[in-house]
Length: 477
Image (tube, rainbow, N blue to C red; front, side, top):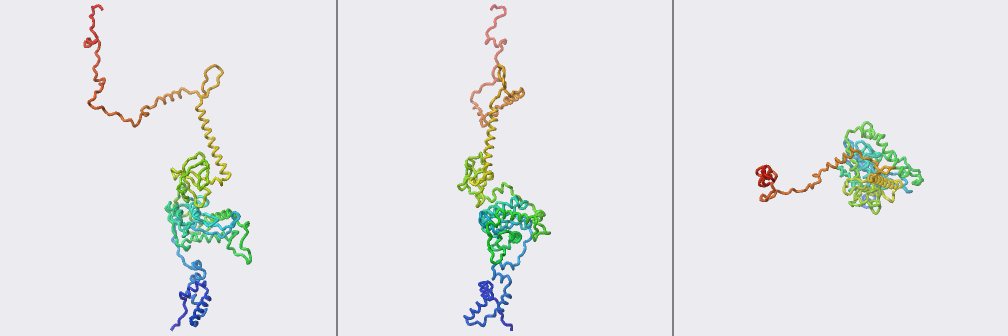
């Protein structure tokens, strides 16, 4: 008869979770419980319990009891999605950069928000913020990818699907509305399932392994015992330099790196160019609305520009448009620049405007230059009109009538007279004039020339009684 052996029960699993997978601590806990119940002989030895834990629990379960879900997930087996074409799906994510950089004398850890094409591993859009990102970072990165401009072109276009996790920034109303305008669905993945967007998660790991570990201010670098954990601020990279280094790495990834999983060891650029799938571009006038919010109010351009949030915004194109009714659109969480649209035609983009109090010297000079240019153009038009209005005569040295400087030729005079004589008077008639109706049948009508009796001829006999009696030829007058 086989003897009973010790197995890991639910109670033992709970104790393992309580003690972080420490089998020795669980053995001491079970021994203390058995002594209180008077059954100390029923507790197995420590070696037996250790063998039971290894036999009954998988490596992933033991790692999860010790290090949590993240540790357990490393022992999972994942499937692979079937291959797709370019722009079939983008994956997006935030990543906190474990590198401290200098910004306004302070040490900060920036965040990167980016999107990657699943089929070709191309990074289509990137946005960097010195703090935890919000929806504006997501919208900026999406717009950079869809427009196919800047450092990411010619990659991008309109994706068929955007896959993100359940982050509030990615699933906020502004992002869904912006993508919904182009009929792009958002795949909301469950929480704590990074393996379901493995392309962008692999990109996050590659960024840290290939670039971040070599930068000054890297926070996860191993240090000798007793070394100071912080670097002085003056030894850190400025934020602008870090963004430049990151964008250079993105360009290198897209054009020179050979990531695993691509056919024939291609670079992302080669895989993108070899894919014959047509790209769907969005016109620039439609992208003017993308990533912008509208408060719904109608404003007027004044001599101070456009007022928004109690601050004035100006631009050179506003010169000469005071009184125009406009609507404003703006990026969330950014008030340094706004986009101005015509209130009568919201699709008409008038231009951008910048904060007047923060205008640079070049912007103020551009505004002054436009005003001066408009003034010179008006002055030239008025001078030309004055020349047309005034008749200039030639100088004379004799007591005679001066002649105009511009002499009209005979042909020009004939053409002007003919043009004046060709005036169609019928065209000047009232187009809505109603002709009079025919008079009633009982009314007396004037007789026409055809019905009037002809006047008698004086030489005819019928005219004798009317014209007087003619004297005989031999009578005396």
